[in-house]
Length: 538
Ligand code: FAD
Ligand code: DLZ
Ligand code: SF4
Image (cartoon, rainbow, N blue to C red):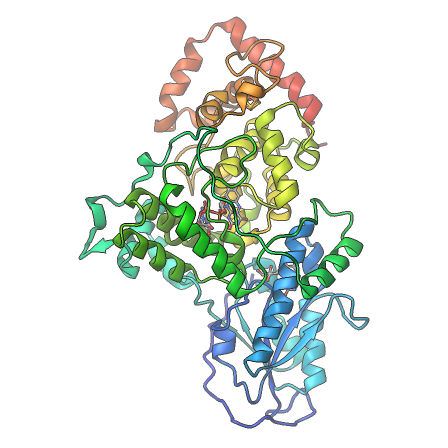
């Protein structure tokens, strides 16, 4: 990518709407382009704009709806939320130019639509907040020349840590560990701080957050919404145009407005937060959401503000409505992991997307799309992904992610699957979670060791194994759980690269002591299984 442009603050705000008809004029309106995941009234581009003069542009475009084959629910969520946001802005006095996907003149790309809007309005400049994806950011670098007007790309200040601040933090550090970054974020936000010390005398309560869940636990009913007329129109459109995309379109129950997203978060505060920490890593058959917040959809779209939700979660602790392990766990996910992965993304792109530390080159098994597998844990994760465009963190990391890594699937294919199937997926957050955290394809930039696990872990944290066709205890039998032999096969395949990792020493000790016959059986069994479900690519 060309070097990031210095974001420019715009202070030239004439109070009257100009009427120039030429794109090169200096007194026409400015086009304030708001992208589909920038639905925040206080986003930088709107803060910099002038209601009386400028035109806000939102455009539904073919390129964005198809650059991966997004889940139908994801497309519907974004388009419906965009249309509702346009109404919100109009209600607030903005002039909004909204381009629908099926508008006959729609060129199908951001570049095409911004260019057309510049012409249409005789605009003198374009204002936009930096996008969340590298591919879009690179394209924007050419806009000024293409439209022959100034294009101001402003920092996205909906994050606690700017891209430049992250670069400074990362500079000259040997290891870019989340935990160190997170402590800085705690200090800079003051969240859960007692002076310069962490509340509760510990920064991280993760060890308390690993309880397995039992099926007799009380599960809160989730907050869902019936589609209104706007959403119904979007559902009709998505049903027609994206029928060949993955996932169930209906029932569609997401929030698509700010007040409804707020209701989802309030419900989390009232009914889920208290147990969020304890059962954060748990999985239960038939329970898709447990105590998770389900707010990533809305934070990533701009309908909820990340710092605001953290402050309200912190307040719940001070009001004794939630324990510290839950509150710290939640805040860490947002000001720690969420901010950190974004920093890593911009620090390491574009090369990061191509990382493949283990040179994995198998294809993604078909059951990632169909859910048709006898592995109960994988089936549950894929089926709920198909239904809800959602799976919680441990399902993403330790079931589908873990399986793909053990199987040696090409990380780029894994990345494209995650980007497509989850309604909260944008590359800035999805890519480091997949390439770094779940596939260890960056060789340990993000994590200190691969998240590789056998059935033992899944059985400890879930009730899937009891009802599974496979035997969770064995690794060399015909009905042995594939996670068991694939786990050892993965370690054996990558012994040269992983053995020197301090955190892997013990496990290689165990492998070393295993009987040769068992080792051979594991390797052979893995080869047969993988050649069937995930053949090597040519
Ligand atoms: P909760 O469990 O309630 O957590 C609260 C919030 O913390 C989330 O809403 C989210 O904003 C934030 N958060 C938690 N973990 C992470 C994380 N690792 N990185 C960034 N934010 C985090 N999250 C996305 O938002 N988009 C993605 O595309 C995405 N892809 C992922 C892919 C893989 C392989 C893995 C392992 C994780 C991925 N995550 C992604 C992180 C996490 O799984 C989701 O944020 C979470 O499951 C969303 O559900 P929730 O809102 O109920 O989260
Ligand atoms: C993901 C998405 C989709 C499916 N459709 C649109 C769209 O039609 N118009 C739009 O402005 N944004 C859309 N988005 C979100 C963009 O892909 C996202 O803003 C960029 O990837 C930058 O993060
Ligand atoms: Fe998953 Fe293996 Fe347990 Fe079956 S036995 S649910 S495949 S971990």
